Amino acid sequence: MKNLVKVERARLDLTQAQLAEKLGVSRQTIHAIEKEKFNPSVTLALKMGRLFKLSVEELFMMEED
Image (tube, rainbow, N blue to C red; front, side, top):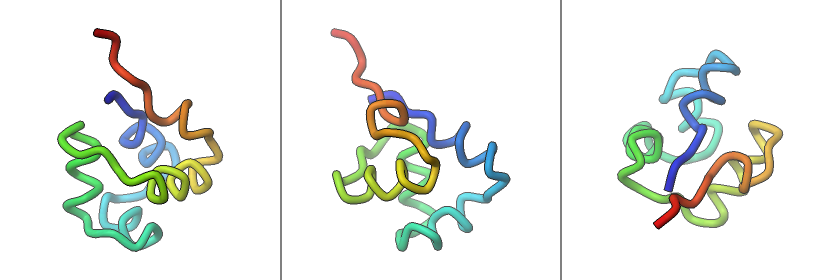
């Protein structure tokens, strides 16, 4: 799954650690999501969307087969 987390984090001028703190997760979780090695839970994806003022569909995109 592709995502715009790194782009949106940079837009808000947040470090991975700052974003992690706002979302209640570890910096390593943010790193893994940005590197597309980990897909967040629905709850975390919704929190991210709310923080970035984007829908989950705008923030996370399914890759075509």
